[in-house]
Structure formats: structure tokens, C-alpha cells
Image (cartoon, rainbow, N blue to C red):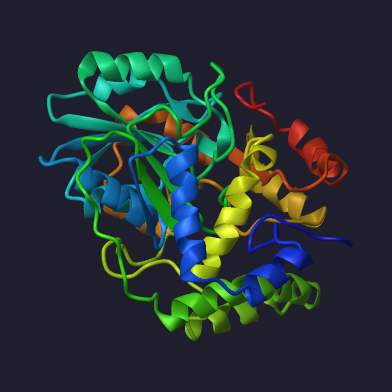
Length: 369
């Protein structure tokens, strides 16, 4: 039986694996990426970082002189939360609309205080917010809009504007399974001229980090192959033991010392130049189902292998959930969605996902798609 993998670099083709493994970059590639973002996103400054959470931390730390609160989506990744905290700011969670997985002006207003400095718009899984409403709300309340393009590079808002061209700050993540994927990396673009000059990191990334970035797509292919003989679990435990791979949402926050590798900057530039094609569809297709555990078992029997999904908790992954002190009573939609969501990456053909959709249809909730 054929397996359909929904993680572990399964979106990498053979050609992409070769490019990631053998690519060579130069300092010029690094600055070409920086200058391309500078021009395409009408920015005043651009800083390339080692990962997306470092980009968030840099954006907040460089931009704001005073500490305060930052409103984030109530259904998100720990990387966003850790980036906000690393900047000395407090993340505040706004509940979501289950139909879009995004907060709304109504849910933002409920958590707005005098200490609120900014809103991070993440367009969850590539589902776009009504940016005009968010923009008007931010202007009325003196808030800075930060656009996080991890899920939505190359996508457009309902009013026709491209994601990343609206807010004062634009964040990019080039991490695993993001819309631009070179395993790790990120960038922050300051689109407002009031931002201070940033410090460009000069040190090379650790050799171990570069090797993991090169080998991860290869290890993903090996893992998927070993699943047919049921040795994939042992293989992954060995990789984690010897630190050849890292778990999701792990990674040092560092935006002023070590830079991204040149070869990853080169590959990120290739992808971001192709962003309109990448962004034609949402990053992932989601459904809300009842009896999710039962659905997952049926999907596994049909050959659909989930290496986790986005997100099993309102702030994911599970192992960090207790650290964030998530206000479940104030974000009940986010809690509900995290208990019922199933989602698929959009790099599979429709025919490959048809058997899965037939299974899901039996359990679909009204809020699902």
C-alpha cells in the first residue's frame, strides 16, 4: 500500500533534496536575498536571521523602545510565543474564528489594553484575514501591525494586497514545512522608516546546524522508506539521540551574532522569487471532525501517515503547552479547534487525497470545510 506522508520533508522532491544537499552559496547570495526582500516588500531595512522566532524577536526588540503586550493568534506555534518573549514583550492571545483559524477585530478588542503595542497577523495555514478591518482597528488604537508570512508568503488578502506589504514590520520564516522551506532561517523587514539601524550578524552558523539543514530532507526520505519495514521509529530515535535532527519549535534565538548559511539564503531566494506560484493555494487544507482519534486510525489504515499536525494544542507543540499558561476560558474556539482539526499539506494531488476526504466526510463538523 502506498503511504502519503504529511511531514518530515515529504514536500521535498528529489530535485529539491539534491539542491538542498549540494547547493553552494556565497556572501553575494546572502545580500541578494536581503536586497530582494528590501525591494519587493518596500522596506527600509532587512535583517536575515537563523530562524523565524529570531526574526520576531529582532522585529520587536529593534522597533519598540518600551516593553508592552503583543496580541497573537490564539491558535499558533510556540515559536511565535518564544520570539515575543525573547524581545521582553508579553504575548496576549486573541480567540479565533473556527472557519478561518484567525483572530478577528472583535476578539482582538476583547484583549486590548493600554499596554498593547502590536498585533501579529499570521494568516493561519494560508487562510487570509480581512486585513482592511484589522488595519482600521490598529490605526484607531495606535497599534503596529506585524505580518508573519510563515504560512502565507506569496498569498494575497481579499482586498488584493500581497501579504507582507501592509504592516510596519514583515516577518519571514524559512523553516520546515513553511511556505518558504530551507529547513531553518528567517528574515525581518522594517517597512517603517522610524525603525533604528539593526546589527548585521557576522559569525557563521554552527557546523552542526548547517549539516542538519543539508541532511534533513535526505533523512526524511530515509524515514519514509523505512516505514514500510516498520523501522522508521527506531531511525528517528537514533537521529534525535545523536542530534542529527531537532524537534519542532526548537532552536536558539539569535539575531545579532550568527547569520544564516549562504547556501540556505540562495535557496530561500530561489523560492521567494517563485512565491506567487507557491502562494496560489493555502499552505494546508483543514477540516474539523468529531472523534478525531477514530478518524486518525482510519486514515492510517488507508495509508495516510501523520507526523503530528497543526495544531494539537492552541499553542503547539504539546511539550511546551504548560509553559505558555494559555487562557483556555478566554479562547474557547481555539481550544475547540485544537481538539477537532485535521489538515493536509497542499503539495499532494487531489486524487491522492480523495480516499482521505471520503473518510473525513463521515465525521465532518459544521464548522469544517
